[in-house]
Image (cartoon, rainbow, N blue to C red; front, side):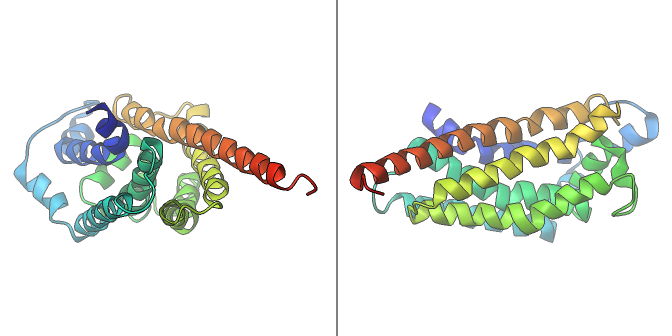
Length: 238
């Protein structure tokens, strides 16, 4: 059970983000000034779960997880950390970069979750690329055009057991680590907290994109060094 939790928690966290977005009473928070309110509204759940944007992300995530299991059944055994990393990057590509940040933060088309983003950081209420939110949008575009494709590339390199994988993975993890700081730090330095509860829930969840990339990058760099040592041992004259 512990092994499954270790491998699959990035997928489980998607369910948490969906449940929170569908339960958050954004109207009460916006209209009455309360910091946090939850409710159960079937229409709110259906608005998101039946949205073509959510269904597209869910379909890609489901296909991605199915494909991972097919890959794990073939060839040499993957370690638990390898499996976790593959799930992590798959869910980033299919949900966290796309359904969350790009669709909810940048384009604001994902029902419910776009409201949660606006509550977490009120600068989302300004038009795209407005001076108040340009730091956010810069990170969103970075995710869409660089981090998302690289997540797919790293999963493919894992599947092929490519020796280039640790190098590419370390670079991607550095982008995730730096991107997270670039996204949150400017507003924290300016003392901007749009909602003391929702904003800090968001920041707490975002710690995963500080801790996980740091650990995976450290692991990848050790693997690169080990490969270098093996290469030198095999050919001392190089």
